[in-house]
Length: 265
Image 1 (cartoon, rainbow, N blue to C red):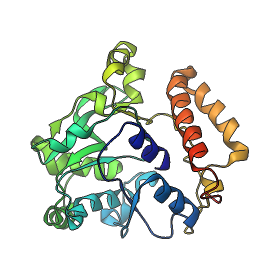
Image 2 (cartoon, helix red, strand yellow):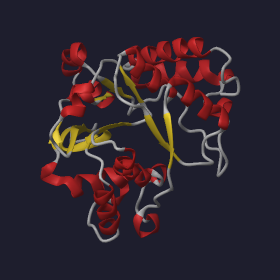
Image 3 (cartoon, helix red, strand yellow):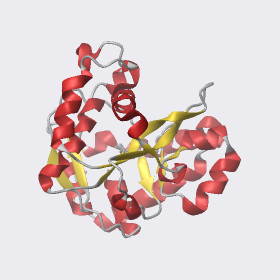
Image 4 (spheres, helix red, strand yellow):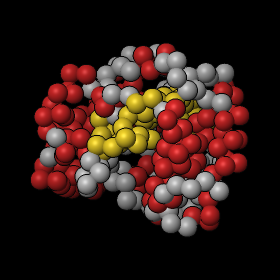
């Protein structure tokens, strides 16, 4: 999130930067870095998956906590854009805050037979926060019929259904687009707002620290950084080397700007 915050500043976004997080899951050093980059910290409670997590993919068990973004109206926020942690902002997207719709997101893309789908990807969403909507979501999720493997994304596709306005793919540059159609990806470049690292991460997302907060070095181990990045750039036959290198450039530039202000992180 620190790198995302830095990229938001570089594109001169005028939006407030608010990061939701689970207390105890992020170390003080990492929180320091987030604040230094300009994020406002919003600690929230975990929202456990319905049906005791039956059928959900293990990597998605905490994802329902994302629904907490609808409570941002408590801060007087009437329009918000949510972006996943595995993204990089490359062009200003402040126009999304002026959308008159209650919900908007880009269609999803898969590598299997589904290809480019009607359903949306919940990695980037433009919403109108409402605590009333949040309460309604929680009241209905337990009995709702949807593919629970995909957690909150499937639920949001059901909840908003035909109300969801589809954003152009440039607002959610899902790497799956490049894998499916190089020509489509090339055509998007001039207008690309956000790159979404869905298929390969420029950081090691596999690190788990149990119930305690991961220290900065554990989240992004400097000693292993080089090997991870080389592996990431070589994966998928090197298809996403350029995108990985773009993230690394932003990260290195951010770290240089931060200096030793948050040494542990």
